[in-house]
Length: 149
Image 1 (cartoon, one colour):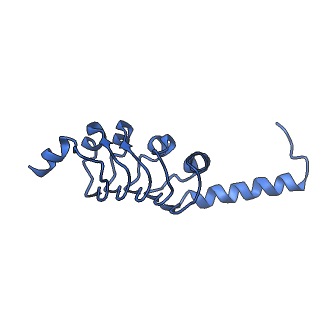
Image 2 (tube, helix red, strand yellow):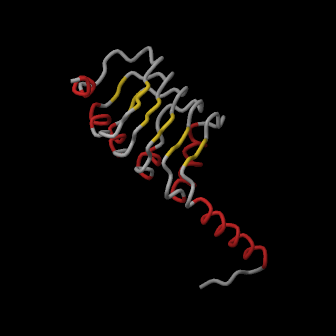
Image 3 (tube, rainbow, N blue to C red):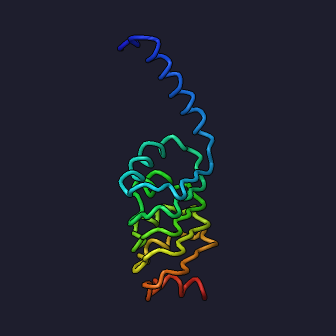
């Protein structure tokens, strides 16, 4: 095992340990209007999401995102609320079915053209879905019809 070379390295390790202990209890993360590129958002999410074990809500609105970061769909399956308003999303992929505890999904004002039927069909806890101002979205998945019956 490698020993810390100096006090600075010990200080950094101590700070990292405190950060990890702090983030374990975070339940809501707000990254709206982050003003970053898709790649920068992906990198930031990849670095931090694994440390947010109790995350229930995330806001990524107004970030000019073209797609939903895979990291979010793979590592944050306990989310109850996702805010993706005012981005440039064109589709909701099948991987969205991983959010089985999702209760609120805000997709207002995107560029949605397609929503994978499998993605929403698995979201049995969903109570709020906002698809307003997605002017290119012409066809809703059949699951919408079954929700209305």
